[in-house]
Figure 1 (cartoon, rainbow over the protein chains, first blue to last red):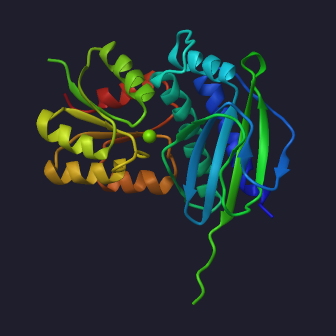
Figure 2 (cartoon, chains in turn brown, purple):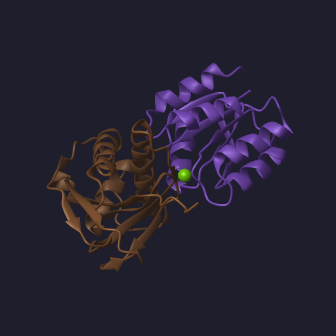
Length: 160
Length: 120
Ligand SMILES: [Mg+2]
């Protein structure tokens, strides 16, 4: 079973990144478990974690919310999911993951992260192994909702 | 004369944000690199006064690019600007010669403070 201690840093980091970057404090929803990592959202940011704990994190939101979040980040209203908007949303995921990695490091898990990949489309199923996922929904109020899907496990020790 | 800056970040959004902060405050952005390989190449061509360096990037990450630029020019002024704020990253970057370490997300003043601390 995936440990909740790996997930809390992502929720904590997401809240502080939204506060600083978007100027609002998200409300944390109920933590839920899923047997596999997948998303039903329209805009997904996928970030990899490597090191003593490894796996994937997917941040998912609707297109409407992504455009609203990007408008705040860029400082002017945007209506098209163009290259600049995609890079802003990707960087939001990178910042949350990077700040989470710092919190994981403070717990003794010093990890590296991979650059974000944006995947558009629903019902994206990513893992080939059955690592369960924990999901934390964040309520962004008038900006919509933002899901944090974390699927991490301790790196398997190689047999001697 | 305006200080000449080379920006390095894989995210277009970050390059635009940094460029706006710097140009609005009297700095000249002479180049933009989207990964470590481009940053090393542009450093050789442009000889900027200061480089901003992201860490998490494709092709070559910012710690490797920092080391390669410092090997080319031991006096290079490089300011890390990254979402990876953990202690071991900061220590590794400073030991490799980075002049400052800014953790994203940042306030514009933090970037300007780092720039103004570096010798003219
Ligand atoms: Mg990056």
